[in-house]
Length: 369
Image (tube, rainbow, N blue to C red; front, side):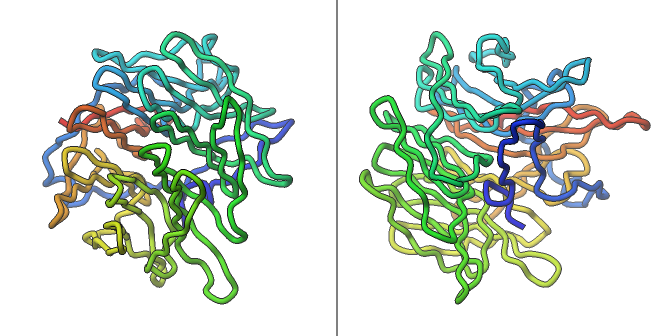
């Protein structure tokens, strides 16, 4: 099963609210020896305040500026979109009145502290908003090809370029508006990452009758998207991270019997290589990196306690643990973001506290030490 835009496609309804989908039902599992033996190396910076909430995306344009987005529920059971801001000392919730009226913010991207974009939706429509360093303002939504679904789209912003990508379409910010292109037939986009106005990547899957489901990656060269063929047959792509012009990483799963093979591919500017993960049942979802290290996280069933991350130093993988509030278990770590100008990363997700009668969810933000 592919987790991403292709797996979580949603058409915005005009009469009913839509809750974000999960990749697979979360189930509790017994703690593993591997988890118990790994000392924590990720520190909690925000927890316990975003009630019945979760965070899905994070961006960090500087050490003193970062943004995380998701959703939470108030005491009356009403859902609200969440935008959290890091000012170098603490995370705080942006007052809802400062932003367009949305029920869920799904994606955030920032090329600088004065160029921040968020994407989300409410019961009636999807929306995009921009922060210029002083205030938020809503930006007109792209005009999509006829019949194109408004799905769990993702943003990517780099330099003076901004993209919004849905399952079957790619929109690029051009002269204060959007230019939208439909992807080739059979392609379903899962993720996007961008380094500059002339270097961006999209990744997902493509289906043909001859070959079935295959991985799909394409690169923006400043004028058009050019496909870069990948070697892993039947790979369901989850995430893409463009480390440099000649270093791009993709995570995904290859079905095998009733299970899967966790897969990380690396492109060196000429060809792809399968950087094999230790097959311990991982579900490689988000991928990013900083300081010369590559980080991956994700798990199929929710962690039984603290989250686990997998770090690759160019030769081997190492399992690194995060932390979780007392009595909690992390359900998901959804996104990673390098902190520009440092060797650190932020991660966001959610954790569960079960008091024996009711399980309560909370948003979670961690940073590697």
